[in-house]
Image (cartoon, rainbow, N blue to C red):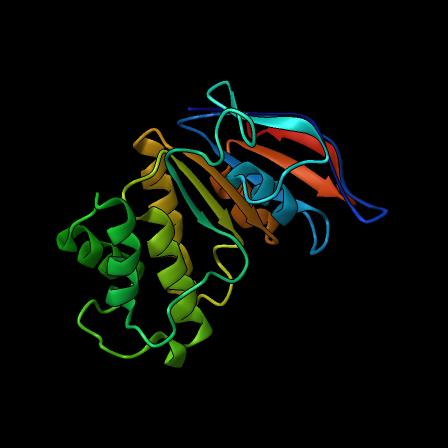
Length: 214
């Protein structure tokens, strides 16, 4: 899988949110987006997912342009800002509901994913009663469902304790070994440097730095 963003601009009203964004990303690598809240990281991720159309420029997946050739990436798992859950369902029932759309993931995969992120697949508690950390874990599990080729995780370590952060880091590294294209954003520079092969630093809707980890 290959992702290419070319001269992307996004304007909302009279405000320029993103300006002249250019990125090239390929499978088997982890790409980090670094920047403070409001810098434009999440908007870039929304454009990558096909959830937001650029005002100018293009986002292409394997040479096919989002919004023209295809509506969304064909094999995508994403956690962006606040994930949407069916609040009166349990974690496993939320996963089953998502899996029912494409019918590619069975109950065994669902249970293994929940266990891997640190949730009890037998817990019948409704998601509306979950803590922020539990909701984050469920959002990550849902992003990994069906083993997608492209994984986008916006601040995946939010609300997680230290042990859970290490578990999620290992999940990300394991996905890289399976030749996935992985994009993560993170406030913590050390975490991003530890995981990423390349980092784009975003500020005020611009890429102000881009470097490969040595």
